[in-house]
Amino acid sequence: MVEKVIIVGAAGRDFHNFNVYFRGNPRYRVIAFTAAQIPNIEGRTYPPGLAGELYPEGVPIYPERDMARLIRQHRVDLVAFSYSDVSYQHVMHMAAIAMAEGADFLLLGATYTMLKSRKPVIAVCAVRTGAGKSQTTRKIAGLLKDKLGKRVVVVRHPMPYGDLQKQAVQRLSTYEDFESNECTMEEREEYEPLIERGITVFAGIDYGLILERAEPEADFIIWDGGNNDTPFYFPDLHIVVFDPHRAGHELLYYPGETNMIMADVAIINKVDTAPRAKVEEVAKNISRSNPEAAVVLAESPITAEDPERIRGQRVLVIEDGPSITHGGMPFGAATIAAQKFGAAEIVSVRQFAVGSIRQAFEDYPHIGNQLPSMGYSEQQIKDLEETINRTDCDLVVYATPADLGCLLQVNKPAIRVRYEYKDHCAPFLEDIIVLKLKQKGIL
Image (cartoon, rainbow, N blue to C red):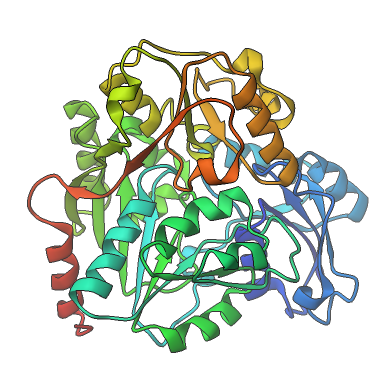
């Protein structure tokens, strides 16, 4: 008997799970995807050209709130949960709804959906979004490319918010590629710092096809994970980043704990700004869950353009969107910079927010005075720009990976904050990576 399936996702892991497990599998018939976390991604269709011959009309995508209704309407047999950076409580809440409506509830095993590359893969993952994957990826890319002379390609976790068929495979190596691939601001924030360093980035939807395109260009592939998801490719070296500002979350969020248990190298980041007790708590959790992992302590030092301009100013701080929305971070690098360099006040932006930005504050009430940088669509970019321009402040301090000054027309002075990876003490990350790769016969 063919089992009817709903894949519960957020436009990323859900499409990958479909491609590698459900697509072409005669045992299952996927009735629908549901979508969460990302604004305005429901109401689309996973296109026939990607869905395969069993789905000549594609697969519809509904908002997650419709899940129970869809189970009843289609007499669904199985709900496959397929997105990341959510609490265990949320996962079981979804399971309870599915089971109450008569469906089984499935979490696909981490290794079950990993594809095998012909080239060595270093995976950079985390236990929560906003832990510091991006700067860690840049650090490793620099080691392989500049110090070891290797050809490096980064494959990024998916962010397919536009035309799904056109985004099956995205290759980006120049700024012009942002336009040809119709990248959102969210995508640019991940790709731009790598392209600045001469690193080619692949992303998209069909990660089997992406791998085929990436391998000829690479001696090493770096998997740059999204949220706290597990890798789409089998890693030869699995590096996982921890955030002691959210100590304990490595035991409470899906699938971050899975990454912790699988890690070859555990990086406890932000030890220069987190309380020592929180750093020790994370270290103990790693030791209990994965005593074989090599542990590295790291910092994310902050630099700002002309930081003296911040002193005494009433500033609007703009932080990385995913980190302070569904990532749950109370603040980010822009807030730290404002405090470090003597801002008189971090102004509240809530009263000035418009459209989808105002909605984000309602959806994530934990956000304080920080403005999440969100640009999943052209309209949301306009909402972000208008919110900034309406805000009563002296200066904008932004800590987004992409240069907002090139993407938005802002009517007030702005300063960009940057952050990079830095070892806190021995053992150093480069030494650990070289040692591990030599032990595996890769170097």
